[in-house]
Length: 361
Image (tube, rainbow, N blue to C red):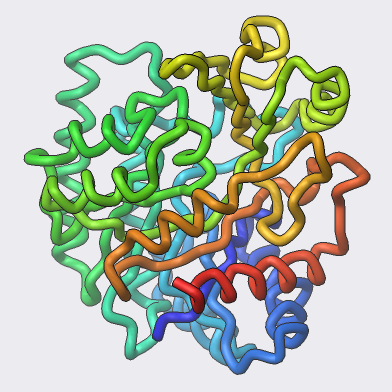
């Protein structure tokens, strides 16, 4: 069985030396803390690192040996952030380059080459998660055509790999493919489902107020697969008009990442592109969900909560043994001070909690 992975985009290294340093500073201690023989990593490689590794078979072999020596293995890469993911301000920069830009295709193919060399011998396939085309504006019919062409080129490149590598498109609020429904509608009939499917980020799913079982059923009915699940939870605010809730929530309004916020009221979902905008623009007539990945095992204190039940429901709806499972809490360093934990202990505790959810599926 493929082990549960944690995504290394929580760590800021953007060169190979830094990536190797993560193995000893974080990944190995997490494995030892868990008492596990193996630990899965959902590796994030910035574009420059992926390019250098793709061009150098000896360095890919070295990275594989370093992983093996520490009881670490990689079956999935996160190729959503291109670079600069720990800059002081990321926000909408994370959606560039878009899938209209050849740099996005080249980065993805470089990641595929690297992953082919890192996959364990017994892995059925490798997966690469990617952004949902780009931020929603601007987007034209010509952009649609350009994205289709580049995805076709990447699919051809995936077919040429020595190992089976599958691309997983990750819907996200505010993007061209905002919801699972948007992603299914765009992908079905355009892509080869043997090589392209969906990444189901359960924080994003929760923020959109989607029905988890219904979302999985829609993907399957369209002839697509959930290739990868990013096990994550959003902030949930039952009563956004409660002064105590607004005060607690304000501590999560930080400058680095975008925190799309949605309000469910009367059957409608109202939208704000960031948490600060939500305070100003959403009426608070129904509950809010905020795109802020909170640790799975550490539900915020009332009057806030999290959406781990959405994750549990999504896992229950998935076909067995289909998707790679990756815990993706990249926000540890921007959590309010009262919510922060030692990173090694926190990642280990979150992985233990996630393993319990998987076992009870």
